[in-house]
Image (cartoon, rainbow, N blue to C red; front, side, top):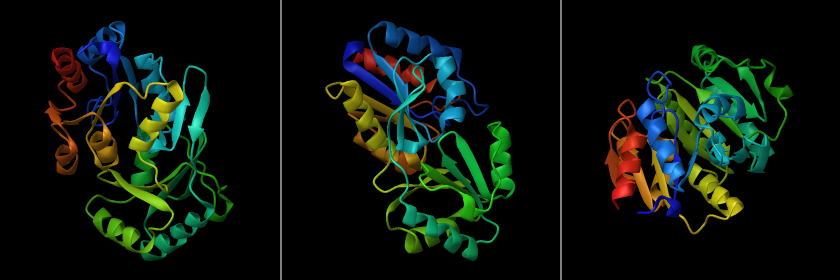
Length: 266
């Protein structure tokens, strides 16, 4: 297939990025070859502006990206949000309900370029340290409305209880996604990476392109399922693999390079 007919959107953590958060040179070389041949390449991530920028800069993206798990389409070259969607004010009431049931729950609230931390635990502190983020620790009542997402951090051996409770008792006007073993995220209603991908295609005038989407975790499921060619990496959750048309090598072995090789042979 001619590369100029194709747009690739890949997840970052667990897909393009290795376990130690690096991009393999073979993937960088393949992306360069794909783009030189006229292909469009971009990313969809749960990360916000600051967390995504370090990776975007390495990739030298010339396309907008999907961030906040689909709640925003952002052009890093212009430092400009092209589209976004925020959580309804009424959904903020779910947090006190969850804290009452799970007092040791950690919460990050991503609001523009700021990360508010009204409730912290070790999972949250580890996440902030990993991403070199300075969380603003303030009382929940002082967190401004209009956030893009809320990240709940809980030990992976107990997060299933949190997920079950949230989906049964805090399900209206939001979309819940399991984005990592210890993260459960509240997104605006109807929002997913698939919705973000669609908005990006509309904004950039590329709805006619053959879409390829790659991912590994629950927050990638909708995007992988909706793409013309959905791809799961070998380390992906079974649910994501079930939605994929192809399964490639794991994230430590050059998955994006393999994807581009497959496209070239179609």
